[in-house]
Amino acid sequence: MPLETLWAKHQIWLESCGYKLRSRYQHDWVPSWKGTKKDPEDCEDSAFLVCTHPFLHATRIRDGIPVALKVIWTHKRSDEMRIGQLFSSPGLATDPRNHCVPIYEVIDSPNIEGMRLLVMRLLRPWLNPSFVTVGEALEFFRQIFEGLGYMHELNIAHRDLHRGNIMMDAREMYPKGYHPVRISKSKDLRRYATHYTRTERPPKYYLLDFGLSRHYPEIRLDAPVRGGDKSVPEFQGEGHKTSYDPFPVDVYYLGNIIFEKFLSTYSNLEFVRLLVSEMIQHDPKKRPTIFQVISRMDKIISTLNEFQLRRRLIRRTEHMPFRLMRDVIHVMRQVRFVVGRVPPMPPKRPRLPHDQIHISDEESPDEEVPGEEVPSEED
Image (cartoon, rainbow, N blue to C red; front, side, top):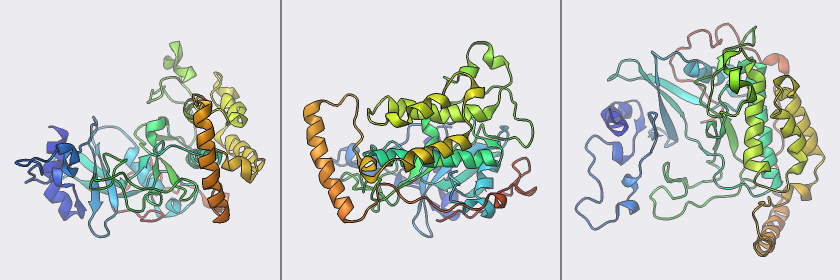
């Protein structure tokens, strides 16, 4: 069944559940440009998602909050729903270290047997808009390290951390919202979406897609599984036939994201190169644990003053004339932030005591979690 047809067949039912789909997915939809001289590209209902997995955006009717709908199949062996609901449970959702995407609700399709919908917070790709300052980059590093550390503290390995499985809640950055498909545009596609910088309105970064994630209460060895990042050293050659420890692989994944998207792109983040090099080294036993990574990142941040944190990220491909022009614009903006007392990085949130974080027998992902609406840290 074509994906758009699948959603259209569920539109009336989803509305009865409290979720409204865009006009394109209404069962009686007629293209708004049909019979007119309008350019379809200018019409909101012309935008559609190109993806291989059933996934769509919607609006929660009772409060207008944008959400994401993701299909999972009950016949496929996966802990995605269980682990996702675990991190959205009351005991864990309010912990500031929790960076797992909140799941609002799980609902079963009345039309297709074995089809379930995860209703989640609508998130934005973390690379859009671009990072501007050193402090913004370091805050991203700090949050994703913290989020993975929280998972590892509960003996849960993600096992598929690549750039597509990290997103951000950008509602504060985009107070007027943005189009869920053409994310650089406003909701009606008539103009570019206006937004604040990450410094002005810091987003929260989330880890998502727990389709390969697993809870390891005791033995931390498993059969190799290849996720989106195919470069893991222990999976090369004959390594795919050998049991591996998934926790150092998670550390590799995050290190490789930073190496590829930051160290290879910007010239003034060299002070994190040593840490990143250790995270992605060939021997997994020599990689630091995520807890050591968190500690070292905190120390790195503590050594930088406000001026260093406010520095503009400089692309390696940047030519001098453009660099000077951008530096002038950047300094003017940062002066405004200093006068307005906008910090270069948000203050660290207080953490719950270590002994308050545990998985109870009722919450274990090895057990079935009821498919009811679950609270998150905030709606």
